[in-house]
Image 1 (cartoon, rainbow, N blue to C red):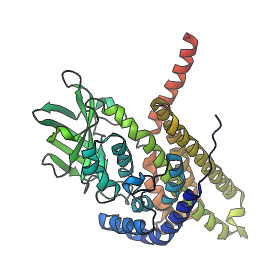
Image 2 (image 1 turned 30 degrees about the vertical axis):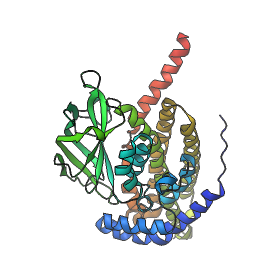
Image 3 (image 1 turned 135 degrees about the vertical axis):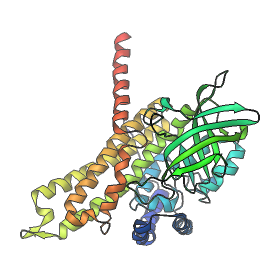
Image 4 (image 1 turned 180 degrees about the vertical axis):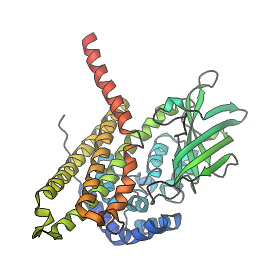
Length: 399
């Protein structure tokens, strides 16, 4: 299928502004964040500057204070934001808030929009998405979910535990996925509910140390101790949580790709600059054959990733949910693996300095690794892609 895409002038204007903003305002704050971690004070400061520079939330709807750009247009802009590990945070297009903003904009009731979506889109609060559980609960296999929700008089009670919940510490609310809520007896399917983190039953039980350091709120262990919420907190229809999750997951996989593509591009450019200026054995490192192979591989994979990402965004915007899920799955697998290879080569090209925070490449290397795991591990996506491909052949044979 041939897909045509040209950049409107408004997109290129935002692209230029974001590039300048990241370089002039965000990059100078990186070492501070690497040293002590990114916190909400830094987030608020950078987001205020982003609003003043008119680069805030390019992916969010215009009536929410964002740029109102399409998914394909956002691919250009979020890549620029991702050129600094702090860029997405500064522009309020970081995970998990970016995905939650999108889902709430699609599913939330007017009252839920006013209470949760508007302050989140404006950067007044942070949020988290609580789905992953410690073993033997839901991880790569969401059907193994152990957290439950049951109907009671006046509302619902949620019981269970979650872990690796990004941004949970300091979040104002969470979108919680729990088993049950559907069917005549209320035990079928899964349900999404909005839980304020000042709810007495919400408990942050731990804050594991992870490879990254630029995500406010960390990746926490959460206890849901018979959390009572009212009927008004149910997001969408009870029992249809897994279907609603796809509203969030397909675009969120692609926005992850956008941001990490920007980070990989920067790592490559830093390494390339160093290779050009580094003299070894009487010549520039960039003129040596093995270094040239790594440089060429990076250039090729950056180009392929960008093309695949743009094509997939256009497909997802026009496809049925099942097709959008498969397209985003393929893109996520290829790009997550490719950007890890790109950054790994960049570390190698930069030598010992490539492992340090001084060149940023080492920090990108540490933070980008988890992209091959979250929003579906590479191996799980490949299993699903292969099953669908085989099913199509069997359907044709049976037909």
